[in-house]
Image (tube, rainbow, N blue to C red; front, top):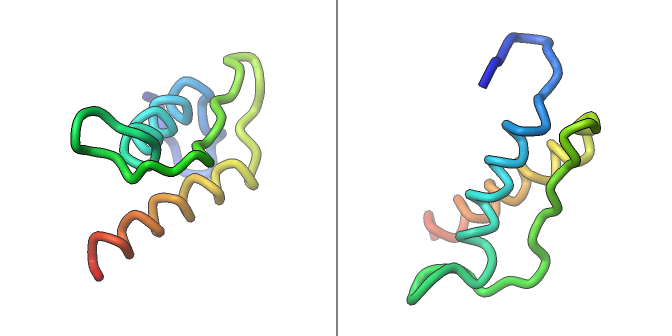
Length: 70
């Protein structure tokens, strides 16, 4: 993980976040997981993470936050 203000989001970092979010948002394991089928896609290591992909990830995390806060 190499973060810097104004820097690009590395595909490997993004994919790690997506994996974590999908494990909760999707079917999960055992009695965990929301059971949703619209999980996020990862990005190839050679590709750039777009602003839309990042915004979608943030929106998904916010949906999960709202569910837990209700």
